[in-house]
Length: 409
Image 1: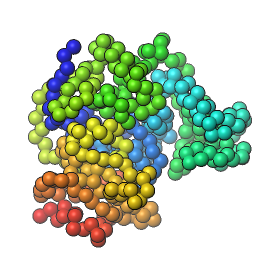
Image 2: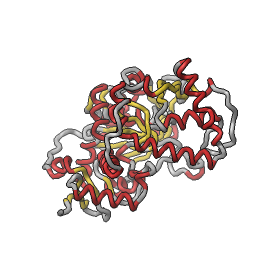
Image 3: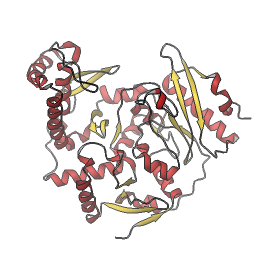
């Protein structure tokens, strides 16, 4: 099978169109979110909230007039999407629940092993009691259980109840009924998803069938994926390079994916077969470019070395670095204009005010800042203010000289 050879420009345009970022904010409401999730499988969840959590930031760049209530309703009222494990902690359509049966079994074993390593296996002794109490009393959070504490180290749970609830969530006994901030309120999973979905058996006859589905899904989560090891393949079972190349070979043999060579990128890339026609189609982009603000864990950025090679944009999320080691700032978001990244900025929001502050702004090298670009940035910022519910945008004095887009004329 011959490899498809394309230019970087063509790859960028395909990838951004596939991700509904060229143009941005082209989808609408709940149907738009479900349409996007059907295509990409999942968006990654992270609890850190500076100007919205990661999943919300992903969606605000694709969904017109997005606000957090829309996603909350889909998750905890309509129950059409669900919190679950895919690419790390994620949000995906509830219809996908049966397909993750084998992954939940794998997670069950993994978390047991982690609890043993952290001397927290005692947490498993409380799972029956937790289930009984939730069965009798309804949805409960970890602070409703008093089973004692552990000394877990940097990343583990400090409460035995939290460790037990997390284990029961990942093995599929519990689901998240709602969140109060970052605090999860758990209920029995059979109360949270439709009976026909809950009772549906594992759809895969063989383990290989599951892996073919899961690797194909991950390729579709981004659109174009390098075979090389990267964060695009995070999620335990996908990180096994030996298994990965065997599964990729089988996907090629079954004509489910195509190989791509991108000009100037040395690694072979892959695309789902059904998207090949979009890649080879001649596209004329006549629209005036628009600006969008990209989430730190956006699907587009899962393989950051690929992003750097394709867009010439080097990005790392520096929240977990000590302040003295950060090149830019604590929480910095990329700014996309048309098919190139033009800047990054550090937003701050005081939760007690309706003010969004731009703490710093960094232009990419060789960006020609035009009037059209400035107007597009202003329009994007207006929409971003609406998304976070802020009434005013302020610029920190120390970076005002970098933000000449406030006066487009």
